[in-house]
Image 1 (spheres, rainbow, N blue to C red):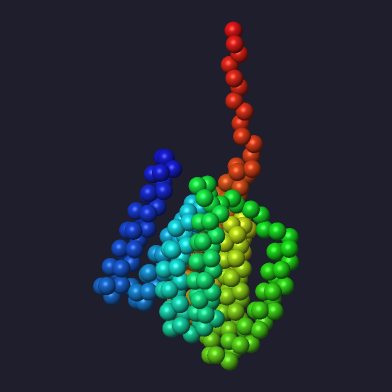
Image 2 (image 1 turned 60 degrees about the vertical axis):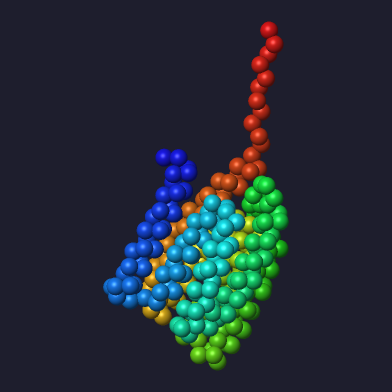
Length: 228
């Protein structure tokens, strides 16, 4: 099976899944908010495009952001609701950065710098503590998980915008806690989505690692035929 066929097969499967979910909701057999379906489908599309290193992951992600903002508000997860505003801004910045830096060639995958590994926890840990305290006074249904996933998501988005390989590893931690948080609030379709994201984070890391190694590999030298 060629790469093109596998690529198109993913989108056919996603379209069929979207139709089945919509039919289940329309007939009353699937007790979910319709925006959960929008969020799940756009979230999967965003991740698939991210693995393919396609710049279209950003507009797909923005659709997911809008749906998620409403759902988190309804579930009283105010930290993650507010996070969507930052996500939208980061998404636009990342979209522009990829477009400007990529040119005709895709933006190169890079490793996270040592100073970034120091800076992100230095800013993130106090932010989690302060945000947890704040969310306890806003009626958040899960203040600590709300704060933790908010900070992890911002860190992962920053690394994605810079096209850092390790953004997938931060994403792995994020989806575990996000799945627990959503399951606790009865957002079962979103909880299942984060289970899917866990698998795609592993696949995405492997795909990007392979691409990272290939982009830095020396070009093969072609031997010229000897003149007789």
